[in-house]
Length: 301
Image (cartoon, rainbow, N blue to C red; front, top):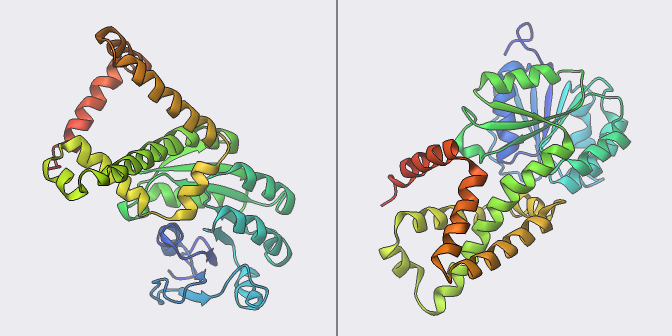
């Protein structure tokens, strides 16, 4: 984009993984200059159209000159890095980046990052985003959690860029984000991990190929989702499970399995379990979700 039309003078993205590149593609058309910094020299960025690539380890003092130089002119700095690295990098940003630069972090867990921002980036513009989907699915029609730490800078412009791509913005505080994520992400992922582990344990009796040979759609759906988690980024999925509230969620799962064990002995007990689920969801949403599941499972053979 030409300098006259650009909203952002210079966007620097630390981390050229899937989420980092999702942000690059979201902001690229609104920036005069975009720089991506990543440890891996083969992180898949095609230079051109204002996109620059820097191969550097942001945790290494030896590489500091290579990636700090772009920070001084950056109007937006995106931290698409593991939470532990983000907290380390913030000290460097506080020293070398413009005080007017907007920091955008993409961590799955926000509470500790919020505390680090309060320590190293206090009073400066900062925004948290969390794409609640795998980036390969595309952003259009997908939910993106927004945590506004400190308004100012280009925060509204970043949010507008996300919305213009079709993202559905969900505005939350850091604590509320983590509380809801513990259920919507940690519980879902834990359920899929446990399902996958149980299937793996069955290999002493039957192969997965044989299971898939006669598997009904619900089994195929669950195993597909379990495989998706198992093939995902270790740091991301582990952080979600290790976040505050994760242990409590897994305890709820353990208790729920115990309830199921007790319920299967009688029709009344099992019906009570079904009723508990229906009542929690509500009749209108139950009907909607049954239709949704039919639509999803109809594509599985």
